[in-house]
Length: 146
Image (cartoon, rainbow, N blue to C red; front, side, top):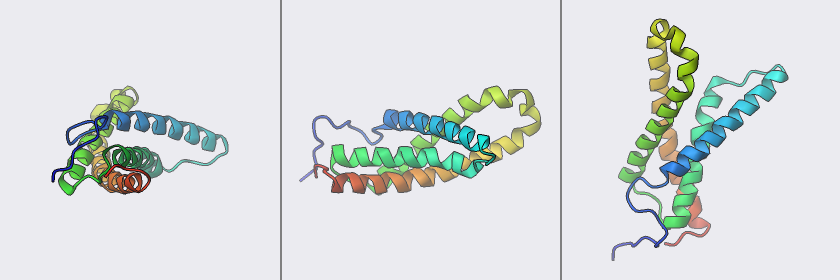
């Protein structure tokens, strides 16, 4: 018997990307605020933490929402596809936010920028895949419909 989605659940394999972007933006704002507060105390926020914590928060939140609304955990292919598209959303956001700061020196630092962005996207795909499924399992356990 095929699983039918609740009427309020978005259809398709790539739901909740708008929600992902919203949580990602909030998490980025929170990281900027935390970085500023730590800088005032003389402590530097590690770049790695600033780069991976927003996608962790966004993917976990979307996974929990997925599990509650859809009542299921996304399958392997669906989760990987979602993780890839969500990572591209994060990449686009990073590019939009970084362009004003790196544009003057872009020609001289282009290889370094591409290397950093490529590594960040690869890590974000893995993070999104892992935390989407973890969040979905949590969402299903806390009241999913399946």
